[in-house]
Length: 241
Image (cartoon, rainbow, N blue to C red; front, side, top):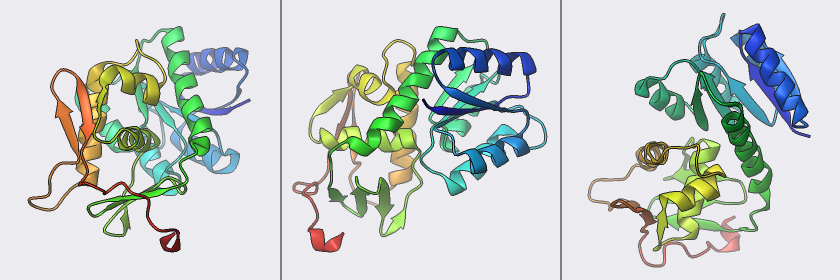
């Protein structure tokens, strides 16, 4: 049974979400405003947060930013009527893992919830007990930490999983459909633009010094390829752990 925190001020919608999630076997806690949601997240430690943006007392963007300051791991699904692309980009850059606009279909909503929970539950069992270095960037698959020049980069859980999937297949082209299956956990309910937005944000966070080649190459109309320097993905010596 997974714990799901729903931060939603519409009583009817919150009740509907709670009912359907409980039918699926989850334990659900509902918070009606941002302050209540932050307190519940700190004390209840949910496995997933479902967050509306237009909530009283503390707005959803602020809630998300404050959640991410103390917790970079718990998946967050934004559920909102704000459908503008700028809001989606802002939400993803603030640390959200997925963004679903109202009105939405129940089956799509449940598919996204299950994908986030499945990825979160399986992330600790990847079997990759290794660290990698490519340029100034280090990827620690045990601690789920990515650093640049020794400074940790604040990746969302989805951005981390996307990077890890590309690193696992370094030098190979990974199609958008493969990324949908392996990172999002489903195929039909996420547009390819969502992948492109996440890759763009991942590139921005990984950064690079002047003249350093881009780590993630775009393969036009196909997908992406991770291109580190030769030998860059060899495991680091255990003494450096």
